[in-house]
Image (cartoon, rainbow, N blue to C red; front, side, top):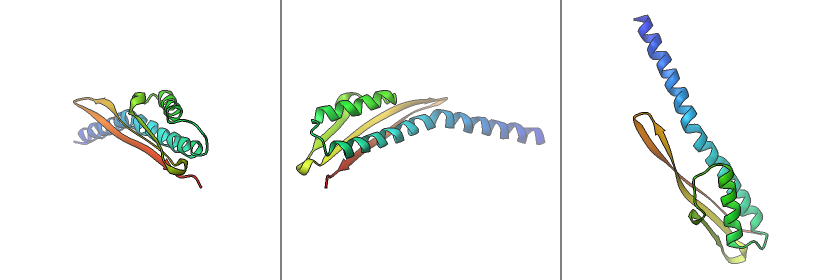
Length: 114
């Protein structure tokens, strides 16, 4: 009975490490991507960059982080007083044994200049 408990315990630890190894990188990349979007919205609110220039900068950052998006998925809108809103909806497919899944992310930021 003691060896059965030990085998189950080792199995649970290995399963937890595998799940962490598989699921943490997409969430960490999303965290970094959201930070990049916030910085882009903050700094570009005070510049004369066009919406397309902002879209390309965000897309370049997404490529660096290996986030699977197309430029058309990046929504950029400049409002009154140069307020800038950037948002992106995307999914990352993760293949877990016996349970493939899609992780849906909704990243965005809105900045109003002073």
